[in-house]
Structure formats: structure tokens, C-alpha cells
Amino acid sequence: MRVLHLVHNHPSLHAGGTEIFAHELFAAMRATGDVPSLFVAAVDDLHRQPHPGTRLQSAGAGEDELLLWAGHFDRFQLNQTDTEGTLFELGELVESFAPDVIHLHHLLLLGANTIAFLRRVRPSARLVLTLHDYYPLCHRDGVMLRHPGNERCDTPTPNRCNQCFPEISPARFRIRELMLKAHLAGIDRFVAPSRFLRDRYVAWGLPADRMVVLGNGRALPPAAEPRAETAGKGRNRFAILGNLSPYKGTDVALAAARRLAAGGVDFTLDVFGSPRYQADAFVARLQDDVAALDGRARLHGVYRPAEVPALLAEVDWVVVPSIWWENAPLVVEEAFHHRRPVICSAIGGLAERVRDGVDGLHFRPGDPVALADVMMRAASEPLLWDRLAGAIRPVRSIDAVLKDHLALYRALLGIDTPVARPERRRRAAAG
Image (cartoon, rainbow, N blue to C red):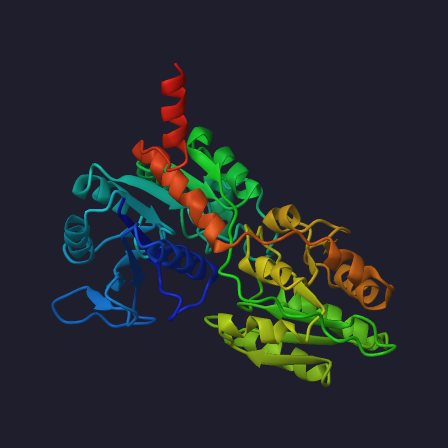
């Protein structure tokens, strides 16, 4: 069985959750030694310029990891328009590698029309698409937030989408929807990392019988020890990790921190991450808000995944204040692996993964007053941290996730699993 992984971007260039998960799954597959795998990351001018005469480049990480320049991309239709360059070279690569399974981890840069193209180039391959977010449903970067008020959108329709983008007619949104559904009909199996996301896509019209829920996992380093508690201080150290943006609720957390500071609460909020690609006004407001907290909040900037254990060693709680329907953010898995309870918005995949009052605490999304109340409780209630941390369930390792994916691939290809073959032989002998 040969597997081709296609993803938008490489984690060495952009360490987003989709890129990290896809690469860790690929690396675990490669490490088995008996599943030949190839990792191809689509990039554009943000990270690489095209080389003369070719759309392919080395990712600098071995001959089985490549970059595919895919800058001619229609973000509205989610289509790759460079059929004579990008798709042609991808097709040659597919013919050469001859994969049995082609696993797409996103449609960005690659394009929904690539699905039909891959069907033509490699008709015997099975196609899998992991739905990490809601780009096909929502033209606003897949966040399903209304514009300009950022209210969560329950039901995307052409008319509602036109209200967010008045310059785009409802008819064009309807055509976009029909085209995407036509392209997605070529996928053999959709993977949803949360039940919440699966239900959203089924309500939108994707077939439930081709949808499977497989939770995310991580390549897990040794867990950080609990922070040594300072006498009389309580568990009062909070942190945010990951990309910083209005969608991620960074400003909600800082507003909550201001309320705590005004009330004389003793706490710290460490902000790890970068506001990459955010508007200058947001970045300036973020810096001003941190400065106004006079040392209670600290902006640390970018970090590498390998640094997470050291960062969390000085933290008690991880705050995930997103205002959009998160699917299955890896930061929750990282926090739980290091036995740090999570304080999160009570929506989407967050509410599904974090059990309120069991291994974390929920608050009303987008409400800094509610978040401040929860943070004050977390910092002051005796034994709360110990009870929640003690109830955290083990995080799925990337090896467990790999096992699930290989079983999925084999089922699509009609291949018996190694465990099933002896059992089948025993039943045949008994008969």
C-alpha cells in the first residue's frame, strides 16, 4: 500500500494545526517501514517563489517531502486554475509514485477540482479528505462568522452569504455550493476529527455513509511535571498557545485579564504565538492591551512545537477562547497530554472535547466577563485544579491515529488487516 499525502503548506513554513497533524501522520506512516509514503505541500508566494521550469521544489527534509507551487488559486471557488503547470506536474508525480491511497488534508491551494483530476490520473486510487475546518461551507476563511459582527453562523445559505459579502450575488454563492458538492462527490471517504464537524457537513449535504469520525492525536513528548505551586498563590498561571487572531478570541482573553487586574486578582497570562497575517490594527491593539496589564500578561511570540513542554512547565491552565466553531484544535491535545486543564468557549469541537467541570471549564464564548469569572474561580478555588487535572483522559498518540487511518485505507482498498487474516483462516478451518 502506497500513500500520497496532499496538504496546504508545510509545517516548517507555517505551523498550523492541519499542517502539523498531517505531517506527523505521514512521519508515523513512513516510520513503519512498510507503507511507502510521499508528502506534498502546496505553497504560494507567501512562502516560496516558483522555480523556473518547474512547480516542484524540495522541502529540505528528505526526498519524500516536496513543495508544489500552487499560487494560481481561486479562493472563492476553491479551484486550482493552473491546469497546465501545477496540476500537470502533480499528475506526473502521481503517475510516477502510483499511490493506492491519496489523502487530501485540505482544499486550499490544491483546489476542489484537483479531486476529479486525480481520479483521471490515478483511477485505481482511493481518495480520502480530512475536513479540518469549514472552508467549503464559508467563504470567510471557513470560520462561519457573520461579517462584520462576528456572530456565529448556524446555517450558511446563498442569501446569508450574500449578506456577509454584498458584492457577491446569491446566485454566485449557489453556483459555488453546487460546484463544490460536485467535486466532493469524487471523495471515497471523508474524515471528521469531531462529531460536531461531521454533523455540520452532513447538514450541508455530504453523505453520512461516507463520513467517519477519527479523533486527532499527537506525537507525544514526555509530559511536563505540574508547576511547583507557590505558597498562598494558588493555581493562578494561565496561558494561550497558537495563532493569535480575533477568531481565536485573543482579545476576549485580554479583556478578561483586564477585569481580573482591575479587581486586584493575582494572576499571570502568558501569550505564546504570533498574529501572523492579521491586520495592523489588531496587532497594535494586542500589543497595547498586553502593555496595559503591566506585567500580568506577557507576549512571548512564536514558538516551535518541541518547546511546548518547557512552556507548559510554568503554566497551570490553558485558555482557548475561540469565538468560531473550532473543530479539534491540537492545543487541547497538547494541554491534556501535559495534564493542564483547559478553560474554553462552550461551543463546537471544544465543548465536545473538554468536559465542563470534569477536565476543564467552559465559559460563554466571546464574553470576557464570563471568562474572567471562570479564571478567578480557577485561581482561587482550593483543589479545583487537582480534581480537574486528575480526571484528564490519556491523549491519543499519533501511533493510535495511524492505526485507525491504516485500517480505513485497507477497508477502502478491500485489504484484510493483519489481525483479520488469521481469524478468517480459523473460521474457514472450523467450517
